[in-house]
Length: 121
Image: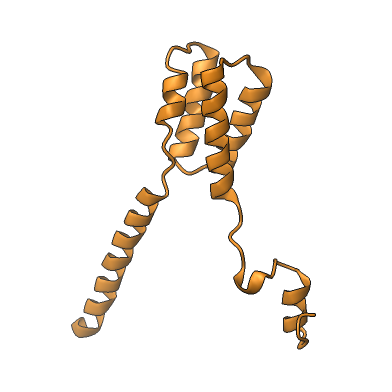
């Protein structure tokens, strides 16, 4: 029994290391955006802190919504506009669905055709 649990523990440990490594690679750097808003205070500071926390914690959808609201509702200087636009572009890239093998889209004709026994055409 102990012999069988050894490989399981090894696999779990290896998986944890791989997941930890992947999550660090996927982090989006917010330093440029944070520097652009360094002197902001009050309500805007709370909103910005929430945005940067959402980015760091990989809640990209929430961060995108709040960044777009920031663009619409507040007068930003050119440096802030560029930092927000850059951060939005990186978040949008991250949230794009990955392409499926063979170029098929979920629910698309290629997928439907092969599931139903056709050629996908």
